[in-house]
Image (cartoon, rainbow, N blue to C red; front, top):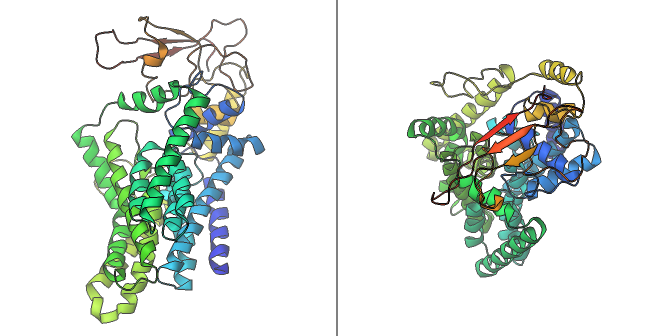
Amino acid sequence: MLLGAGMLAVVLIALHAWRDLDYWNYSEGVYALTSRLLLDGNDLYGDVVVAQPPVMFLAGGALLAVDDSITWLRLGMGAVQALTAALAAVAVWRLPGKAMAAALAAPLAMLTPWAAHEHGLLTPELVGAPLLVGGALLAARPGRAPAAALLLSLAVFTKLPFVVPALLVALCAVDRRRCLVWLAGATVAQLALWSAIFGPSMWDDVVLAQQGTGLRTVRQLAEFGRQGTCNLLGLLLSAAAAVILMAGSARDRALLHTCTALAAGLLITLLSMAKNGTGINVVVPVEAALVILAVPGVVWVLEAGRERRTLAAFAIAGTVLLAAQTASLFIEPADPRPFTRPDASGGFGPTLETDQVKAEVARAGRFDPVAAFSGPPYLAFVAGRPCPAGSLTASSPRSPRAWATCERAWPPTYRSAPRSVPRSASTSAPGAPPPAIQRRACSRSSERPTVSAAVTSPAST
């Protein structure tokens, strides 16, 4: 295990250095800015429009409380990924009982295609992954049902679709009834707790707004599906071999059941890509769950020898494909192939590289530091600038709590003028007209609120 810990530390440092200040994911900036606003005392779900449950923002706020910088935030999130990898290695150790397999599983869990692509980014997928893997580990141990249920419940309030794998893991737990009871109790307790802290407007943001984003077209969904299949194929081949071979020979059959349930549940959550606003990075926790099965699968097919030639070929092919996809991301990040599926016209590389980010941040620094910054939220966060926000006007007398929130393409915005102006609050430059956010709520006769958002700010850069 010391070998695995050493390799994990080396991979963590190498990935952090490789990532540097590159701008990869729009959502990272939104979530980072929201965590900063929470840390500054703003009213989450009250003043600030938020699309996810609170656990991720509390984690982000805790990291920013130590050091309010993108470098520290990414290092902290990289450590969270390392925790997921370490838990995956523990699971691999308990399944086939091979020390070398467990040692290799730790760095592998951080070097799968999308884990490397999303390394160090503050997203619900990265925050929720160790909670789900930890819950699956504990659910397979007698007497650990309460602890497993608490972790699984926390994962649900990191991202609501995680309720599917959480429920499946609880159903496959050693103490199924107790785990289900504790999971239900912990979920109800959190519902009451977060509602008491943030009020009913939290559910307007997290539930109603998500329902109002609309669905992707069949063609768009097919493209997402092909890309996800391309990236998961290598792990799926090896994991399938594991499930076939380990059914009667796994050292810890209870853990095999909970880990298989976790992988199945996370695969089901991929259906959430049908909704606008859900990106393909939902693959990240799926990869972590499949690594737990794939590594033992490779071990078992190699030990089976000639008796399992076909399975061995699939497992080896899957391993080679996985390695090629991750390597292509490091070799040519602008358009990595075969990380990107062969028929795709564009890649999944960074929007801006480190030098470009530094240039944009320097440009933003030439303007008034309290003026609203109209660029991407990530650049606003790095530059310490606020995003546009301002007064709220509506064409309907309906309560704001009945409205769907802003379109998710927009950064966090205020429903009303903040009571105070912290260093990261959105405001206009002195003497300039305030930025305006115009929302149009639906009429009373419509079935679902619809919202349009338009941001204008003469003080914005």
